[in-house]
Image (cartoon, helix red, strand yellow):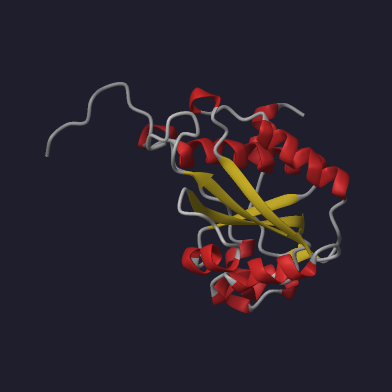
Length: 188
C-alpha cells in the first residue's frame, strides 16, 4: 500500500473486537519503534505493555490508570501499552528537550505498522501519570507520556451512546493552509 494512503486510512477507533494480538505482531510493532529517528540516536522511548491473554496483571494495572471515559471503551482491547520517554540524555545527563517528540516518532511507527498489519491503535492522554509512576516504579528520569490501546477496531456497537456517536462521526482534518506557512506570523 502507498504510504500516504496508509496514513489517510489510519484511524483511532474506540470500538474494538476482543481478539488477541499475536506475540509476533507485537514484536513487529516494537521493531518499528526501534527504528524511529531520535536526537543523537538516543532512542528515549520506553514501553510497558500488558496483554490480557498473557499478563493480565500488567494489563489491569495499565487499565487502572486510565480516566473513566477511556476505561468505558478500552476494556475490550487485548493490549494496553504505557509509553514513556527519558528526560535526560544518557550520554551526558543533560535535559532531553525533544524526547517526547522522538517518542512520538516511535509511536507513529507503531501506529502505521499496526495499520499495515490490519489492526489499530488509539493513543490516549487521558491517564494518571502520577499513579503510573507509583504502580510501575518509574524513575524520575522517565516521563509517562501516553497509553496506547492496541487491537482490531470496528465494533462501535458495544460502546456507550456518547462514545458511539464520536466513533461514527466523519473524520475532519484541517486544511494544509491552516498549519503550513511560507512566511512569518504576522503581528496582531
